[in-house]
Length: 75
Image (cartoon, rainbow, N blue to C red; front, top):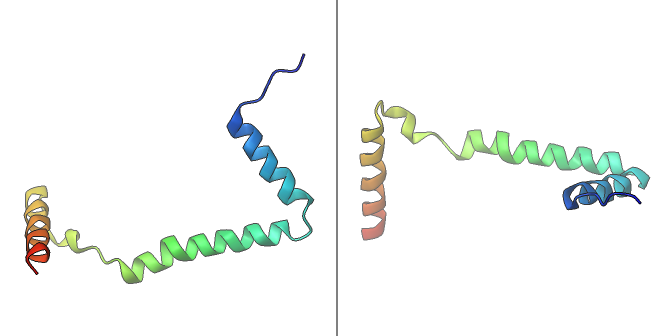
């Protein structure tokens, strides 16, 4: 009797076999990886600056965040 595989392994094999049998599966995976790279690395650099790096201690960072939250809640 064959041992039942765990659910994550079955899910992985389902998608792996599905993309392997496709003609353009590798192209689709390449496209997905390129889009993820653009979303998480390129856009992060331009649209999410690091304001907290200007402070040295954690207490200064905490004060800055609390002041920003209070000001935004008032406005």
